[in-house]
Amino acid sequence: MMKDAVIETGRVIKTDGVTATVLIDKGEACKGCGKGQMGMCKPGGSGMSMEVDNPLNAMVNDIVTVGIDDRIKKKGYLILYMLPTFNFVLGAAIGYILKHMFNISYMDVLTGFIFLIATLVFSLRWLRKMEKSERLFIKTVEPGRGPGGNEGGRYES
Image 1 (cartoon, rainbow, N blue to C red):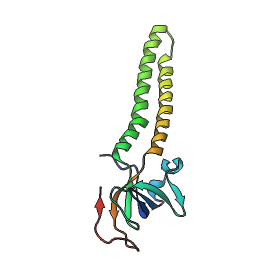
Image 2 (image 1 turned 90 degrees about the vertical axis):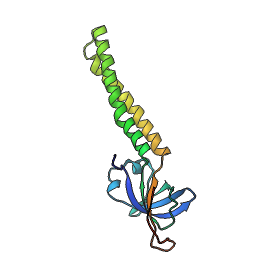
Image 3 (image 1 turned 180 degrees about the vertical axis):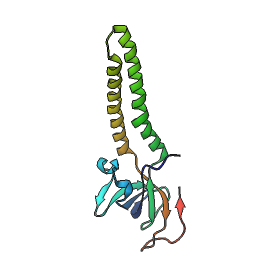
Image 4 (image 1 turned 135 degrees about the vertical axis):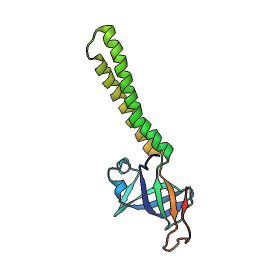
């Protein structure tokens, strides 16, 4: 089982149908997170607010944890790590064949790195596109204790 890449706790400050705006205190998950750099998070005072999917119908003042869907996380790992590694090895193998066909030394190294660089450029563009199109979602809800909060149990997706 994979560890959650992003899981933070925050308070729902606004709901709008199937989405919610969550105010999250800056915590451990924020350090080094690319979401703020990509514009998904909007800094707000001591925390940040972000719009997330609300499959559990959290209400204003509910305490929630937000995270990334496992499918998206696996797709990101595949694009960022597996695809470049595979293409680097593929490029080196093609270069090895070309090296012996045309008697050009270092062709295997050169083609391996060309494949790697091309794949990294493609992968980073794809990840940037995913960052803009995919959204975090509410994983658990603890009803809030402030005005408008509904007292009760804990809900999980």
